[in-house]
Figure 1 (spheres, helix red, strand yellow):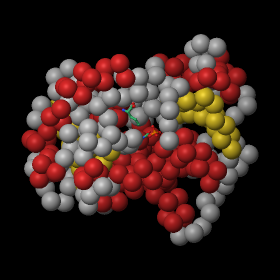
Figure 2 (cartoon, rainbow, N blue to C red):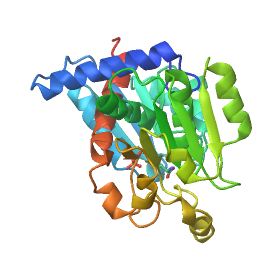
Figure 3 (cartoon, helix red, strand yellow):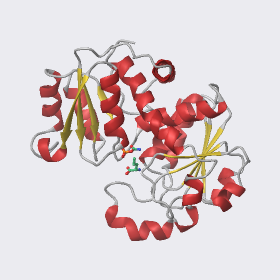
Figure 4 (cartoon, protein in one colour):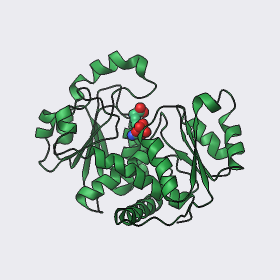
Length: 307
Ligand code: CP
Ligand code: NVA
């Protein structure tokens, strides 16, 4: 694996390897051991065009715990595509650091960096996808249901966005059933689901209108904001369109008793999810957020640490 830009482009065995390394590193950490400093002497440049709490802190801490150094760069400092091109930035950084992670609007900038640079490029969220989030999401489901998730159902309720797209691919690759309930105009492209079915043998990925139907056999219900970063101008329209797609107790009542609730965060209580659900007994959103640290440690150890 040279880069981590999409789940689609990452072979299933590499995803499994990253998840295994992540789980091992987490066991060591939780038993009080320090992890082997596999990033000693190495640096990761972290480029952000958009705000972040979880991604920024979990990556910085992950690099620190693996013995490396993180350099945090904001868009107002470096101006990706404004002050200089993504390709030039990647060529410069490749002579100074050992990896680049970037949170960008246009997904193409990540591809341009990977093409022009000579160090691993990690997608820390683009308008297209959020693959690091999907690593933590699978870790959280494994924590609940065991290592083999094949045949489990992840029901995603809400916007067919970057997070949904990475999850659909992850489920297709690892053998989970993925169903998204979204209103027309906000579903995933049908061609994407077709590509997943073609690319992942036996993939069971589907999309429907009705959230209650989607969660009927769900092991996990997942939602995300209805208004992603960069869509603020569409806020009023989106809140209207998604009014019937809230994850609330009535929706949970339509799901099996053992269902868990996931959300990548940040959450807007009372909008896409109610406070009683996100703070209630079915919610796993905070362990899920903590797994961002562990998932990305696995990723960095494999991509940059030779594990
Ligand atoms: N889930 C997630 O990526 O959170 P941040 O936007 O805070 O990094
Ligand atoms: N879909 C959201 C995810 C935030 C982590 C966004 O892109 O803003």
